[in-house]
Image (cartoon, rainbow, N blue to C red):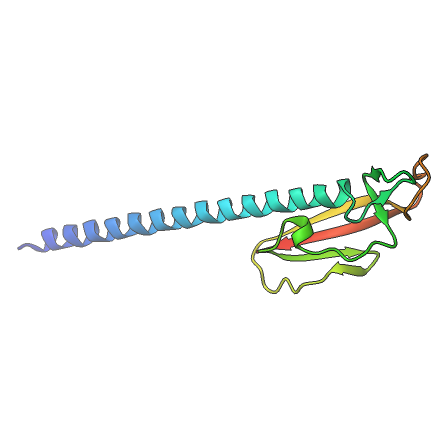
Length: 142
């Protein structure tokens, strides 16, 4: 065996190892992207449920839900109401925690800020003026 042959074999083994390492990194990156996209979809769906329904929104005198409103006397909501039972969730409005969980050192946290009209139920059918708004912050992590 010559020295050239040994060097060539070492280089071949090194290149195969480097290619395997790069393939593993690429697989990990794809997995992370899929998890992040899933988390983002869940957060967006929760934001729609939060702003478009009766979870924190007001109702009119005849019981109709008014979307994009924040009921200042809202009862408690749960992660299950938002479809996020398996996630860490934090929802705050006017520096008051509606759902308070420690997000810990989660790698991916999706934050959604919703600008909603303040009201109290039941409200007149004419609706809210839009002058008094409330920012509701939704944070979701896995």
